[in-house]
Amino acid sequence: MMNQGNGFLPVGDVVKGCRMHCPKCGKPLTRTGATWTCMNGDMPLSQRLNDLFEARFIIGSDVRKPTEMSYRVGVTWYCPGCGIAMDEADNNIVCSHCGGMLNDVIWDLIELHPHKKSE
Ligand SMILES: [Zn+2]
Ligand SMILES: [Zn+2]
Image (cartoon, rainbow, N blue to C red; front, side, top):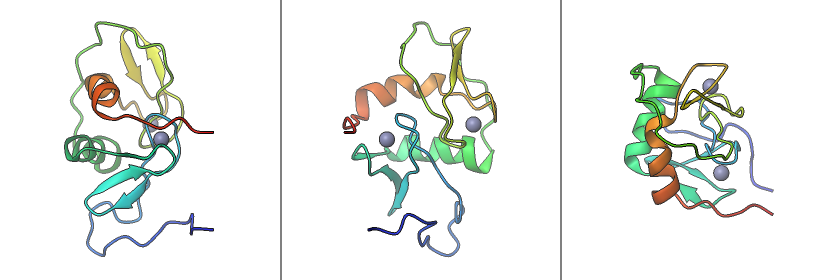
């Protein structure tokens, strides 16, 4: 069995000791090099999404309110910060716990981040 604990993150890393969760399956992500990866779905985050998630859900430096979605996706998304299912309401995909939103990255997640189906 692999160590499922906190892992060993590089000292000085700004996200040291923090957890990130997969927006598609809610499982904890694994820090691989410069970005986070969902081992469950074989889905590494792009650098852009990685930086945005860290700023918004871990560091809290990104507090912009993304524009509302113009369409409904109809699947469940998980908060990268909290790991809980997000609500899709009023064209926003929002976490009821931390208030973080995913509106502006849904396209990115669907088109550029294929996620393997879990067994
Ligand atoms: Zn995943
Ligand atoms: Zn959250």
